[in-house]
Image (tube, rainbow, N blue to C red; front, side, top):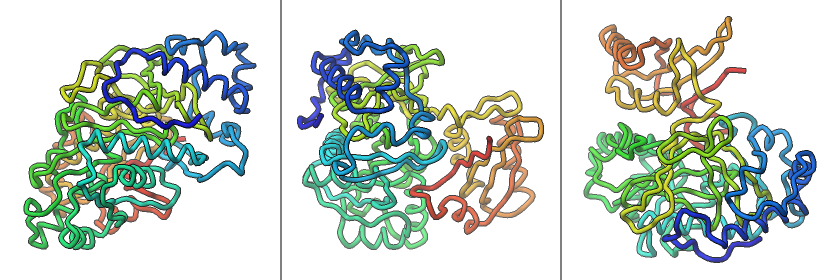
Length: 431
């Protein structure tokens, strides 16, 4: 099941014969080795010999995040002694899931990020400063590390946080690029301003942005992306990935969505009835992994809602591109008759000059309805500031969430608990 060839950046969107063969290989592999999929095929009377092309995928049932959480071990397709490393999801939408990788899976993971960094205009001449963790079973950290090593570029493993140390290292070693969560880049800019560092005279020319949107669904920069680029003349590249799919969608220099890697993944965007949606229509990202040995997935619904664009990109690639994440299905909020997704609230709070930082908490009230509480760090504690914040939220949302003002220290404790690997800005306390 190993993948060894680099993804051709100019593949067309229609499935290739190679991808059809990879799908048939996967079905045979799952039928022989996966306790979960053996049972799924048997229970649904599925003859895998009837599935010959990617177009036949709708004949198969989907796999959900609940399946993976409840029957985690039944997805394992190899003997324990063949597992090279265990990684896990962050548990954003429930309990964490363990993903077991073989040595070949780790090579595939490196290839995935090798392709991604090349897509994001990376080369051997670059030096990347990694501002994220490589421990705590975090797949993204090790994936970026291995992808950069495969390119042959320089690496600085500094980890998350501590803006003073980040800047000291940038000024001393002079990396050309950083890999970071966008909201942390804002903290870097704030520190640089206070310390008198001219960011535009430093060596950093680009940033690979992980974990948060920097664009709207029309690919224009959102407020977070604009705040970064208004202060720092660097190129931003957005990414979208998940631990389960072991593959990333990464922007090229055109900034028009994350490019698909068809040698590593089959992607579908499905509606509520598990039917494919067309271009520029919201759908749930559903993936079938190709070339994975340890825990391959078939029609796995990620819970993430995106759109796709299948027009050829100006960079020359013709594979489809995913828009920024619109939201997660389980995180959808129904508040006083208004439907909200956390990313839209993030954008709204990021664009407010009166708000320095925030956490959004959603719970269920006594009559079973969604209740929204905003923990905010205001620029100043005054009635005037409070009035501006409440008036702005009312004008933009048409509804008024609860607000609780907290200190910068308190918000950091909420965002970074002992188990967190990236800042937590959305807390879901619903059942």
